[in-house]
Image (cartoon, rainbow, N blue to C red; front, side, top):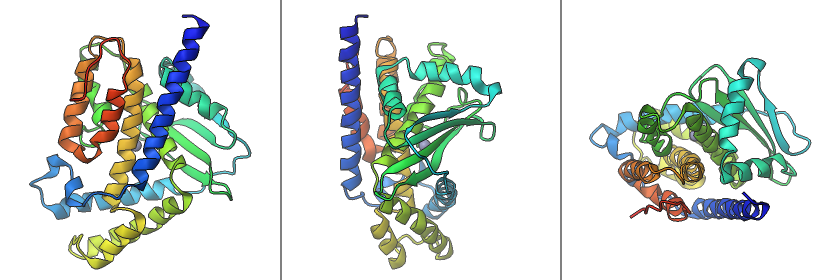
Length: 311
Ligand SMILES: [Zn+2]
């Protein structure tokens, strides 16, 4: 490929990234839909109490995990803190992520970031999962530190299609040997990059407010007979921009939108890419209808050899 073509591709990738970021900030400003409209379709028919009870417990843990203190970062860049025993597999996953325009563009953006120090590490606990946290902001409210923790076997394991419609959609393609585990690992890396981008575009004050109010919300919810209409809960949700469920869902679906952005590039030349998009679309329509627009935007902006459409 000529240098000129590479330049065009880099420009296109960066344009997509900025569109994505712009879209992120626009969505953040939009008022959240009603609570009942955002419950996963699969959960319909189950008692609302137990469903939200489950969420209350999960989101409490997630928010606590993501709000612990991080070391002070002096300047930006990417710090890869990988144990020797994981280095070979990590390199494979990273190479897969960097095989796409969007992966390279996002990596470069953080590698040369003037302020944000992004640490990437691997942990054996939660081997097939990944998490992002240890956020820190400077006095101007700009994000200056974040840590992505990848599981030591992040190239295995497909999370549920209810909250992870993109990662889950890869499963049949791996079982048919159309993709390898490294693609799944790189998709999970993209999902975590999506979290970093989302938090970077969220006002620090709002993030802290949510971290502070979510446990309070959950505590009331668990003690009031799971009544979401409780005026105290309605007021808390208004203050923090949504219920804990809505905030958590929104964050996860932003991670998935970035995972889709990566896959759009990664499988653009594969004949199965419309089938993959079709599977993502099916899960989004079934479980994440209120978030469909962010996935549809990515699908419509595809520049693939085999165009398929988000009808
Ligand atoms: Zn996530």
